[in-house]
Image (cartoon, rainbow, N blue to C red; front, side, top):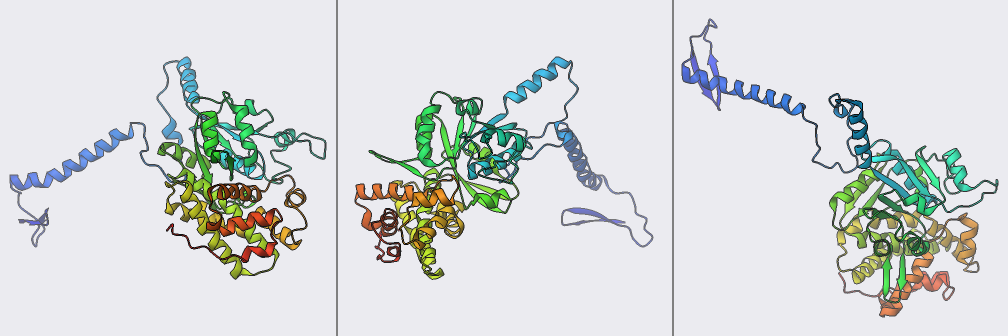
Length: 442
């Protein structure tokens, strides 16, 4: 027999009769070291299996739910210790409140509620503040939601989750929550924030799903900034190509979370919203993400004019391209920190596309153009949206005020023209009767 070293491994040449001689001592040690190493690995694996596992990586969409064996612990010394441990764990769980209960607000509550039941880091219950209304049947909207588990007015036929509790008392709905989800028409937010001053937890985090801005004497104010300044809490944003009724029936969609400094907060929002059919990606660009969600509604109004005048797909594509270009330019003029890459996320080009194809702003603008502008947006909104609110018309007005005040009107012909059409100063056909101004911003 002979021992042959080959590529760092030891093998024995058995010879013809398969019988070998005794291996020398040095070679024997070489042979047993790998075996000893494998035994050590096996012991280490067993040892580590006895230690509670901690995940150091963040899955983009889901928090791992521990199995029964993972959550089991050694038997407590006495029953009181068990109760105290349960109370301590409950204290560390996040509580969620949704401020708003319209079409998108109800869908957001449905998404969140499905996850709070599964993820150990959240309390099951999701409080949803409802602006109280009396339905035609004579019942109050909150009573109907809590009895049927459906928002009969704004999202009929969709179960929200039995852990969604409708609450008409705004202060009561948010008092225990450390995660606040704002999703109301943007024109109501200043009043809501004033009511909540001093009423929210100091450690609360907020996220805004609201598409719009406030225009003040000192300039435009993003809704996330309004929330942060008035309530003294950090506010992230969630925007994307999200037509609520499609997400409600669990058709695949994406969204973007914009955050400031705390990556761990962004990851928490991702876990709270993500489902197999709703994929959320974090981006460190609050203003960029929020402005995408705000400005795309102006572009959608323009797209509706094109549809109402039957101008065709080529014209609509041109309007969408010009609109996206003005969105980027306006965002960068307001906030130099806005990133180009943000416009390629779901909140950017994807949201422009879906809103111009199927959103409520496009739908009502189409009717406005078909009527030659003779029926106001307020009238059409009341008739067609059944209590929901348009965002594009008011956003166009707010953006126009900024452009006019800063002398930027000529730089943004599409934005300016949309507002002029909305207020009746121009005919709907004017949407394609302007020349694109060359911008030196790229």
